[in-house]
Every structure is written in structure tokens, then in C-alpha cells.
Length: 428
Image (cartoon, rainbow, N blue to C red; front, side, top):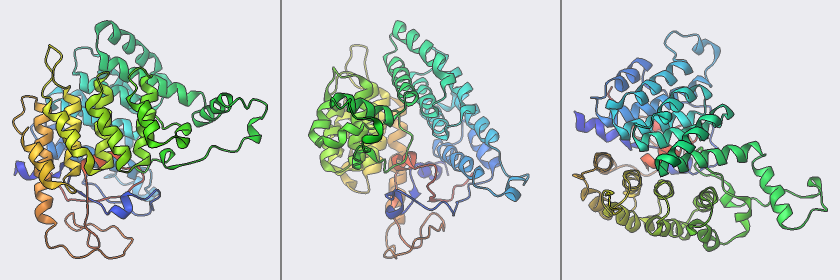
């Protein structure tokens, strides 16, 4: 029974033609389980991690649904409020018995809600220097995603304290969040355009005379996730290799390297994935940077990255002498490999099986759940009928009747707030 529940972590069924589209109709919402069931799943840390993980993402959808309900539905006693959902997630985040992997997912989901009411509990966990680095990092990143100026003092204080205490991952996360907030407050892409104008020595032309900068693939986010840094408009005029040089330049400001990272992700394709994959295994400057690269590779699902993700996992647990790799990097690499199993099944499965008994519990759990879910879909996808050209998304025991393709856990994390997914029915 527990094994069956673990399978649901990445077993989302969502047709590729929908997950790849830039726009998707929001008329049809899928309905999460009752709020009581989701609360029960998260209240007990002894529940299987797959069950708790699925509950967290069901809560994210329930939050989105509250903004799309008609007045009659909102008045229903059984309809959860946004405050109810935030409290459940916040309580889960605060309970250390859930473990680092689960708690950092709670923080991630709260950041993707982009609700300032999530900030107090995120700030509380971030400020606790005795708490897990991976969890605190995710709280800081979530505060950046929410984007409230009220969190700036907390981020600044923690950044300064972390620098003194040598918590590099926390320091860098807070700095990137602050850089992102500063970028937004200066005007975001409008500020980028003005800077580009100055760099081109075109000061004689005013803003009205300057046409908008060219929009290319690197400026459009096909995943619609709330990312820690935006792509840069000037990357539109650079080759993939030139953006890759910015990405790999360890002397460059980390925020600018992040911008290059997301420009490459949005541009997509094998060449972009290769630049990112090389950065994952060659970078020596930042575990935070490498963990974000691994996450992005999971979103892109380019088969070329399998070998590089394997190299990352095989570096082993980080030791006091500096050898090995940080758990949050290896954890993201494992999740990314899980998302690639539908493209290179044998290689990905073989690598993940190597680490089913890894001494790092976060890595072990990530590999176990990815393999269990993939094995389940390997069976359930057998003997399915050919896809039909239909634009509806229906759910029947987690199988789309018209087209059957898997969306990985990494893709699920990246799904936009407006995307609607048919899902595997869970047993809470």
C-alpha cells in the first residue's frame, strides 16, 4: 500500500500538446480531493512521501481554483479558502518530522502561489540558522518568487548573517532574491531595454522612438514557472554558445549567470541542453547554481543530459574535505533523471538504481520515488490506443482517453498556475 502511494509523485498524465503550449484555456478545472483529505495527508509525517507530495500539489491547484470559482461555489461550506490552504502548507513546512525533501517542496509550492500571506512562515524558517540549509534556501527562493518588498529586510539580514556564518547557499539565495526584487523595482524588462540603449550609445533617441526589443525564444518561458531570475533581452542577439559562455563564467555575477541559464532553457533544444549539462559537471563556484541547472535540465527533458546527470549523482555525498556534491544538487539530478525516463529508459533507470541505498536520505528518497512512479507508468502505458486529435483533457483513473503521455515531476513543478492537468486519482 505504501509503495503504491509512493508511485504518485511524478505520475502526472498530461498531453504534450497542452504542456508545450504558450496559452491554455482556463475554462476547465480539475478538482482536487476534499480539503480534509489533503490536510490529513500532510498532518501526519508518517504518511508515505508520495502521498504527501501529491497532496502539496493538489493544494496548489486548490488554491488556483479558489480564484476561478463562481460566487455560489465560494459560498459552499466545503470550499477551502486561500487562508486554509496556506495554513496547511505552512504547518507542513514548520514540522521537521516531514524531513528535508518534503519540507523544501512545501516551501517551493508556497513560493509558486505568489501570495504575500505565505511570507511570515517562510521568513520564520529562513531566519532559523539551526534548520536545514536546503529547506532555508527554498524559503528564501520562495520569498523571491512572491516578490514582496516587505521581505527585503529579512532577506538582507539573513544574507549578512549567512555570510558571517559561512552558509554560502543561503547567502547566495538571498542575494539572488534581492537582485530579482531590485530588478523588478527598477522596472524589470523596461530597465533592461534602457540599459541596452545606453550600451548602444543611442542616448539621443527617447524611449518612444525606440521600438521594443526583439522577442525570441529565450524571452518566452514555455514552462510558465515563477523563476528566481529572468532571461535577459540582450541574449536574443547572442548565439547559444555565447550565452553558454556567460553561464559558465565563474567570475560573472551569479544573478547574470542565472539569467543566462533561463535564456538557454527557454531557447531549448539539444545545443542549449549541452551548454547547461556541461556547466552542471564543470562548475566549481556554487552548489546553488548547479542545483538550479539540474532542475532546469529536468524541465527541458533533453536526452543528451542523461550522462551529465549521472556524473553529478556519482560524485557522491559531500564530505568535510570538499569532495562529493551537495545533497540538493544530487537530489535535483535524481528528479531530472526521473523526468527523462520516458526518453532514455534503460540508462536513466540504471543510474537511479545505483543510488537506492545512498547514504544521503534526500537522494535515496528522490531516486526511489522516481523509479517507482516510472515503473508504474511503464506498465500502465502498455497497449494504449493511438492519440486522437481532441482538445479536451479528461481524467479516468489518471489516463487521458484521447492521448496518453506522461508529464514528469519536474514538468509538474514548472506548470503554470493557469495550466489544467488531468491527474492520477490518489488514495488519501
